[in-house]
Amino acid sequence: MKELTRAEEQIMQILWKLGRGFVRDMLEYFPDPKPAYNTVSTIVRILEKKGFVSYRAFGKTHEYYPNVSKDNYKKAYLNSFVKNYFSGSFQELVSFFAEDRELSVAEMEEIVAMIKKQISKQRSNDDE
Image (cartoon, rainbow, N blue to C red; front, top):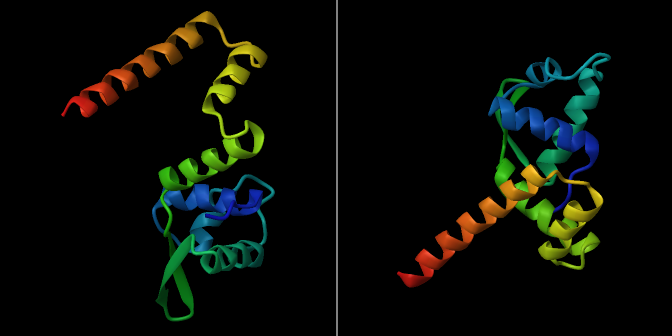
C-alpha cells in the first residue's frame, strides 16, 4: 500500500470521520484558511487513482467514500515506518519511546499491562 502525502492524509482523515461526503462537506472540516475547492477536488481524484477512495456519481458531482479503512492504513503505515526507521524491529521502536521519549512510569506500566494482556490472549489462542 502506498503512503499518503500530508495533504492526502488530511483528506483521508476527514473521509474516515465522515464515512462519505462531497468535496464541499470535506471543506467544512479544514481549519482556516481553507484550501480552494479545486485543490481538494484534485487531491481526492489523486486518492481515487491510488485506490484509497471511490465515489458515487450524482450528475456532475461525486460523493466520495474511503476504500481503505483507517485501521488497515494504520497497520500498513506503521509496519513501513518500523521497517524504515527501526530495522523492522518493534522491540527497537518500544525501546526508543521508553528511552528517548521520557515516558512516565505510569505510561510504561500501562504499556506493560497492555503487552501482558496480549500475551495472555495469544497464549489462550495457541492452546485452542
